[in-house]
Image (cartoon, rainbow, N blue to C red; front, side, top):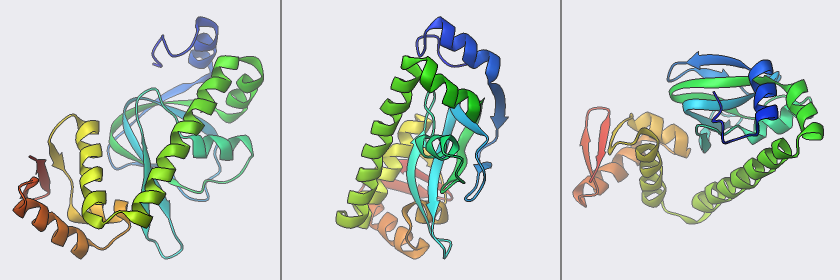
Length: 202
């Protein structure tokens, strides 16, 4: 469940009483674009990636949701009774606490620490989205790709990353050919080692 240190006892009891814990396997889409949001997720274990998709089906990774974190974009949409503007896909097997939107909205009025939690998440995600914008606008593909690999290495706590070139291309919003070309150059520069569907950071 949510770490005891995250919230005080009274709010923790409310969360435990109102929330429902669900387990999802890696690759599972738990929220799609245009879905109505009925619950607010708090990740208990594993991780979830949040993706934006355009009208032509191109995707870009916005951020990861890690344990004891939630998705501020879906939270705000839920509070305002709007549909989802993002996709949420399980990156590694995850256990998620689902809190009804009505309860999560009610707690904003009743529990200052819940409000602080929501605003802290908003600040964190805003900064991450600025990083994404800056990377797309100003960074070269090799820098973006290396940053993404380091993110995944940190998530999985391993320098060996199981991922396809197509998956990386989807998350960066570029072509698979561009990813393959940059990866080969990175291998030549002794930054990584490549094998079938695996990349090792050196």
